[in-house]
Image 1: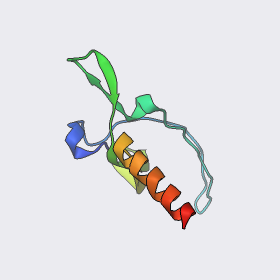
Image 2 (image 1 turned 180 degrees about the horizontal axis):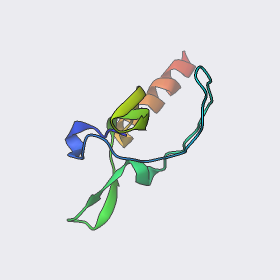
Image 3 (image 1 turned 135 degrees about the vertical axis):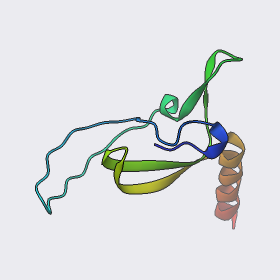
Length: 94
């Protein structure tokens, strides 16, 4: 997983792993649940985990050097969540 650049984390961090065997051309769905802690970094000043917001990249591959798929996931800040909630409420009132 790649954290937003503002987080200052390494380019790729392992946040889930599942070994599966596939034959050529075979496909299989694999699911991973990400917890808030998986999206957090340690703050040495407050001695606590702080959830990061912004654009994360989720990588899928056989290793960190053999990435075969990736997608972007946006994690909203509390302010973004509130703004989205107000937009939905306003749309429902129309």
